[in-house]
Length: 240
Image (cartoon, rainbow, N blue to C red):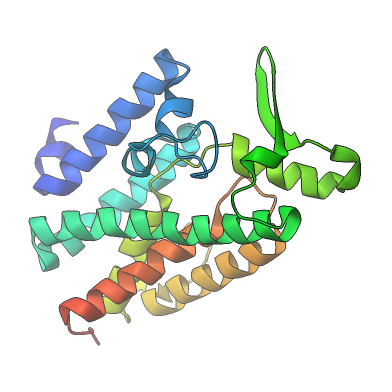
């Protein structure tokens, strides 16, 4: 274990440690996810620190594992190209970009249902011991799907480093587009540009067809989008 950590570059190593520590802390202190995951800004549960802390929280072991696996696989290469300071900025901005797109989608969904993106005054808050949430104050006027969407947006936090990880995937495919990737579920190697491109297209499709999903697919796309914009803004040359 010591050899694994000692061989990682500074920022990747510290990000890995912080994510693991936060995950373990959340297992011990149950309210941590509600406090440090990020809610829709109009939600009663939103706090100003959440846009930063959410990227270090995870919804379960497998969520953490796959994100940290990707961080360890792709992060050292990208940190080596960008340098530690720029890599850290890239990681955080991609995570924030993921949140920006997610908020935009949520605001549109709330507006479509309630007629305003800031609908808290039109919602009924309830707390049945372990179940907390918001639903329209006149629920009979809304479909079950609409009530479910409002409940999810106002009452379920978004957590995870996935937005930042998608930014790393985008950066890797941009820098090393023809690098073959060997994946467990694909019997032949696939070039990075095809794997990442297909992955992003799948996330776009799922984002527009599974809006009620607990997985923020379009937030993943936001991480990749902001990563691409940053790379262009910094003038980093594309690999071949």
